[in-house]
Length: 67
Image (tube, rainbow, N blue to C red):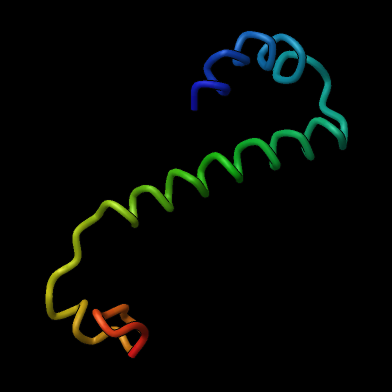
């Protein structure tokens, strides 16, 4: 996220306000797909799940390893 904020002025100037090319779209897809993918992983990792859902997961890690 820090990198995205640091380079946003350059990104706006060099990519968003110019005619779009295939490399522009490739860059934007690569940059923002990874960014939003990481955000989704963080949200799912830190969202608590109920005990019932945890008990019903077939491959949940337990004290003895994988069940």
